[in-house]
Structure formats: C-alpha cells, structure tokens
Length: 282
Image (cartoon, rainbow, N blue to C red; front, top):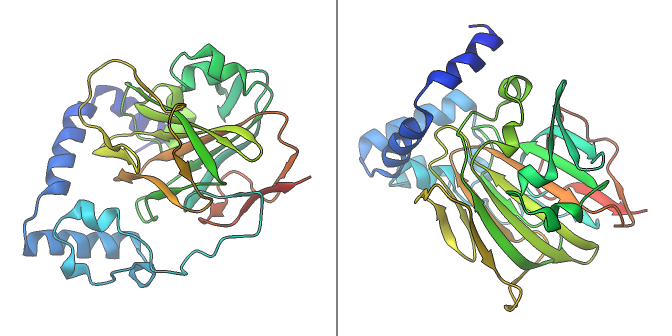
C-alpha cells in the first residue's frame, strides 16, 4: 500500500467508532485470550519486558494494563540536565518556533494557537520559542514524565479528529497535531512556563493525567478547561504526569527566554529515551 493511499484511506475510515471499539476491547479482561493477544503484541513489536516492573505477561488482566505498564526501578536513570526527555519514542520534529508556526513535516506547519485550542494568550507566550514533537510507537513505554519540576497552571481538553500520528500521516495530513484530539497541560517551571501536550490518535482509547485521572472518554465535543492556579500541584522532574492507552505523540513548547541550550544531537527520526538530556543551561 502506498503512503499516499494509506493517508487517503484514513479520511474515509470511521476513526472514532474504531477508537471506541478498540478502547472496549483493550479494557476487557478475557483471561487466556487477553494473554494470547499480549504475547502476540510483545513478539510482533519486540517489546522489552525485562524493563517492566512486572515482566510476567500472563499476570496482566487486560491489554490496557499491559500497555500502560510501569517500568522497573532504575530502568531509566535521569540525566543531570535542566530538561530531560519526558518519554520513550522517536523525534518527529525538534527546533525553533517561527513566530507562531511549528514545523510538522515538509510542506506543513501549524500554529501554536491552534495547538493549544485557540487560547491566544497562552500561545503568545511561546512565540519564537522552541518545540519538540516526539512520537511513541506501539513498542514504547507509554507513560509520560516531567521534563523538569513544574507547578500545574491549567489543563485543556481539545476535541478533534483521530488520525494516526505516525510519520507517514504527519507528512500527509496538514495541521495533524493541531487537528487531532488532545490534552494541553501548561506548567510553570524553573526556566519559565512550558506546555506538554498529549495528542490522541486512531485507537488511542484514552488519555489520563495523574492529578485528574482519565480525561477522555467521555468526548463531549467541546473544549474543556481546568484552571489550577489557585492550587499547589507540583510534579517533580522525572515523575509521571500522564499516560496513553495505546500509542500517540507528545508536543512540548518552551518560551524564547529560557536561557537553555537544546540538545543538538536530536534530529528527526532519532530514537530518544525517558530521562536523557533534552536541554541544559547555555
């Protein structure tokens, strides 16, 4: 199947219905059938179960519990850096924000305002800043951790499409990451404010944060915003802040005046791991 045809096909598929069905199947506790599916998945995607806190495939009652499994202690040492990578995955894109434009793929950009759900005040803070888009493949660890200490300011649920977020779709669907369903979390950290966005995709059954729990479903079809500025919710560097049920992408935004030097070794398609250096003081 050609890349262009695969992208075109996604426009026709009932993506939300497939996602709802996948979520129900992934949460089902079907005994030996669940174990067989997990065992097939581990073999198909070469999942390293030695890194899991619980490596016993047969002990997971549902696929979701397997998929969002925690790592064993010490599996991801944290770099002594100002910002660390928040996930396992691969770099989709990484670089400067041009005014308010984020580079998606050749021929495609999207705006910070669109990404954060139309909040122009929030988006203005990141003009000419820096962004990182990291794709989590099916084989990756799917919990999301903090790149630095952060006090939670707000969380916004933005409804949207459910296209796949793999590299081929990023090349073929304009505005993909500002088009799909997403959860936008803004924090205040030691180097200023930053945004960590969880982007949904086809068959991503749900997205959750540690302070709220499951954000979706339900899918109300409208933007929802939670303001936490009158609360003192602080999450430390390297601590878990959220998770995907089935795989997706995270997009991070940093303002221009951070005083940080970002890791120049990060290039598109490069694999990255939770805890490695993303940026250090300039």
